[in-house]
Image (tube, rainbow, N blue to C red):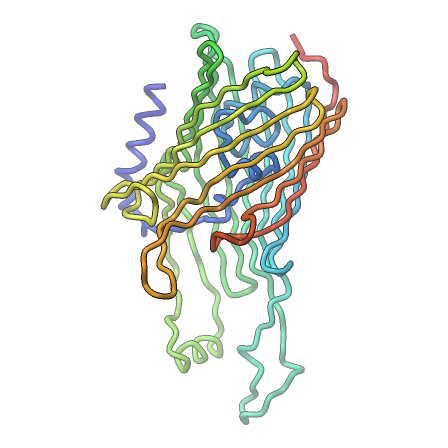
Length: 359
């Protein structure tokens, strides 16, 4: 744990190497798994399946099967943007699990109008092309029980990021995440350090002279090769569940505190260097078969049309069904469009393979 703390603060001090971008790699902040999204992303302490590779890699060691596979699909902005997740996790032995996660957020078939007008000033639709804007990431995860400390689990991610803007440019990135969970009586405490050493994206551009000329005429800045740095983020969480009626009805809740260190944000608590945003999630289960979920997150300070400061929230709800080796989860985020954040219907399918845990 001391090594993780050292890496976290060493990462913050090393960010002067590149250009710090407050909202870099934000596609990795959306979240995966309809269960967690229904609980407003409050999931770093209760993540216990294949999605833990994203939320908190330490939670992979809570899965009860030898192998688990998960799939998710969501669409944003009336289907213009597609968001997909596929993950798998495999138990190595009774104390360790490895995982693989793939995430893609993309807008496909975007019209490229930079060459729509020919040299004579005529509109020529035969010159119209299209391109894709895609953000993708691969996470390689490992989780392990710390035998010498009862109830302690740790985990880490190595992530490779690829961002592509058609033929115009793109970036390769690399970063590390770390996570821990600790069970104390009926409570579980957790921490996830995202981008623990800073995640570096190296951008390169391949713009034709015609595109550069179009940028210059329209007053847009011509992009240049650069390195973009994602600042570390620390998420703290605590969860507990109760059996309230003859082992048939269970209730579980979680609270997360999302801490960022890239300057002031429009969050509940904020300073010039640090900001904190809470998230709350609740899950009610019946016979470990059907689950109802809800949560409140994305609590932000904003300005209304009159210029008055207001607080916006994002309420989410969802439902899940688990039968033998199959689980189907659904989430509807941002009920009633209360927040200005993304809105979508999200489905996740999970499959357990070989329920027997290896010894």
